[in-house]
Length: 515
Ligand code: BES
Ligand code: MN
Ligand code: ZN
Image (tube, rainbow, N blue to C red; front, side, top):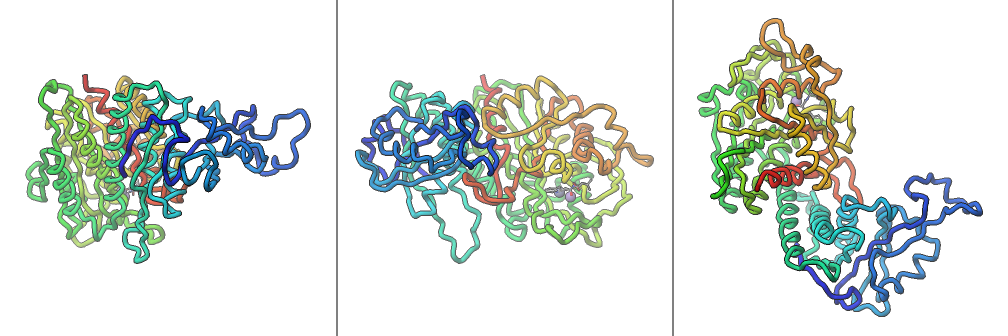
């Protein structure tokens, strides 16, 4: 999708479709109303939405005026209406999308409205449109949200369907406000384009099933990407993993006939200070059967996305290489299958991690933390001063936070605050969970230093406590994306399937370290 900025008046733009946002200016928030609230409004109460377009263009407003005043619209977020041959506009169509309550409308919502525009129009065979940036949001922030949201909406996962339509929007024009700095807006659009495309690159990797995305293939894809954007990339196999004494990583890999891959991507821009060195470590389980502690058959097919954390780091490195912030970054992905076999590790086995810590394996299905233990330690050995890991680590984080928020853990409050800010700017939802010392009791072992499974209660925290043992005193953030890396249902702004969560926050976070 190509993006261009236009500073013309909306009415003058020749396009397949102009898109404008309708916001509700009534006191009451329509989205809070129940279905029964559709009965006639009681007198005196402001029940009906008061819809106004988020544009100062009189010609566009007058086209929509009758519809907005008709009382036919609910004003709830993502309600769409398409008008043909709008009088007085050069556009062939005018698409109106509700953005919900005006006073609550932020760039978070704008991303979703832009995605909705893409998905509404591309399914009708339309390939290009012009989106009017809402004046209530600062222009740079708006441009960025529109580009990122549109790219997210443009992705569809139906790769292997014979009837794949491969419908895509090819060209987006953003109609930006008059008095903004054009250069700054162009720069915002270019940056957002890189980030949005990298997010879709990650979703591409995550979408592939395990027979088409083995650790070797993931390594090849990383290498190819690194070559294209000028990153250094090493992909190591079993020999190197054993040589490095990555006993925790290898304990998972040993059960599979597919060779593992340790992917190391290095970004060292000239002019970057020696420190900090950021380490991005991803869980790359290309399929998680559970191993000998095998998972039930029901839903196991979803475990092809257990490499989403790793794919996120590969996509993030792509974006970083293209955006060129002046800060050193190393991306590490520990990729392997988790399989049951005659060579697989068994519950009760004791493994020695690269750091020297001994681990009693209670459950071979708690494999993500094993590969990350060595990934995090290796990152520190390579000189990383700050660590972030991303992993589809626990079912328990889905119990805690559902499909809406990813779990965030940190061993350092300053690091957390910085990440939280980046997270906000990127428009992704995450929620911090605790790491109190009390939880450490849950991972005590009688035979070894720690166990790999702390049981059911506080399962996401137990997993994070395990990782903390390997981050030690290095400032570290852990993202548990098990509930958010895969959309269980399609939404107006995004397809069902891989979401690409965390990439935007990570890129923003890395940028925050560049002077
Ligand atoms: N990959 C799973 C976690 C997962 C669950 C990801 C649901 C995506 C959706 C992870 O390896 C796992 O199996 N975790 C176990 C840990 C337990 C054995 C301590 C879990 O959450 O049940
Ligand atoms: Mn598992
Ligand atoms: Zn797993």
